[in-house]
Image (cartoon, rainbow, N blue to C red; front, side, top):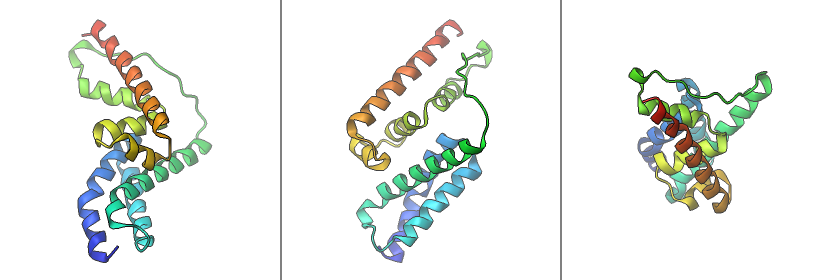
Length: 160
């Protein structure tokens, strides 16, 4: 990969990588850091990365960097995760906010695959390559995530 190809990848993919990570971590600074770390790793490995695989390499690197960060933070955090029933005021009900809230309640693997599939429009094979999961596991996680989201949002019919 040449310097020109690297710069092109920055212009082409940095927003998508940032958005993907931001939807997962919900922290702009962390998302920027992870995106920057991903491009740093790309620069370090630029000679071994095929220019046609740059997008996949970036998303894969960003995903694994994000997972590493989450694991590090969990080691230091001392809290319990409790599933809470959603409570919404019927007048202030915004479906977009509810969907984001529901996505945040998903386990990290399910959250990542659903964001890559439904927000970034990756194929199952590409998601498998990025997350290092089998295609069957990717499909299973997407199915489970969609079922959870359907039930979570379905409860809103009683509220709205």
